[in-house]
Length: 344
Picture: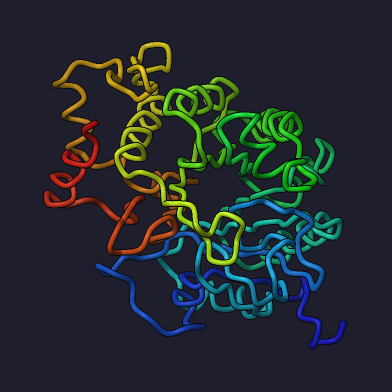
């Protein structure tokens, strides 16, 4: 393959945070945050078949795929040989690698090839963020045999109507609601309980009650929820949509933590006439202790060798001036601010 093409499996895109961690880009993290999961993204000249309204990689967005931003930052292209070398040389604190697919028919074979290549020399667990539109149970088994240890499924929208509106036929996209939930269940069957994460984006138009029900559904199927707060991507169809209301996000973060840690369930929670959470199913003392720990408000993602949330995506769903998911332990000032934000 010609170097000029710069396509997977020889090349991958990496997040700006990963590039900084591997000394492939300069910069400093706010409050000395560290990235504990190196995020990789498959890359092809033809890009992604998806047309998701909120995504910077959408086929509808103008520009070449390799130049499109994702989560509002650049994802530079580098050789996979360089990534493997630098993971061993510069990132002793990294506890996981996550390889993300795009919806492209070539992604299956290239995913298998990259997993095997990394596992030859990198002693880190590997997660995959897969595209259910091109994946089935047989493919999931191949990923596991190659060495992947966890699976992520980005359903993103909390309801079928919102999924269709933002990912499916209303934006002329290829994705189907039923297929995504089916593959999530298949992934649990192949990789086991708590080895599958479901991405959900808060702020696409759902109510808090609808989001809580979606989180509970993921939990009941054997998965865990990885939350994102909607922040508009420049150039996307939703570039002018306001960011998720911070109070809404804080309440959903707390509900997600309680459900995923078996501390409460959706049917124990109460909601007002606007379907906002008014009771989390715990007494005030229990809830205060959990909030004071700060843990519900840290980034939710795949664990590492020693960490509950190694995939901490520094400032991935909000800038440092408006932190939505904290990539580090919260201090007292952070917790006091959250107490004010979470109130209806």
